[in-house]
Length: 65
Image (cartoon, rainbow, N blue to C red):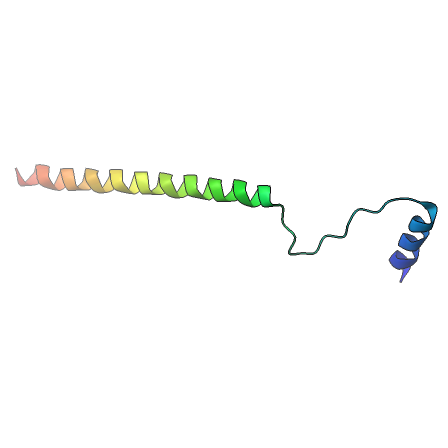
């Protein structure tokens, strides 16, 4: 009950309080940055995967010759 009393006394004194953020409130810019980073990591994973698959295929073809 104390935070309610303290916040009401702040309002009476004219101090502006920041808006209360709910746990689900997330900054859209942060979501965009995280999405771009995840896409970059996924593309890097695909690049490494393709490189390793091509390398192993080349090694197998080299052994056959």
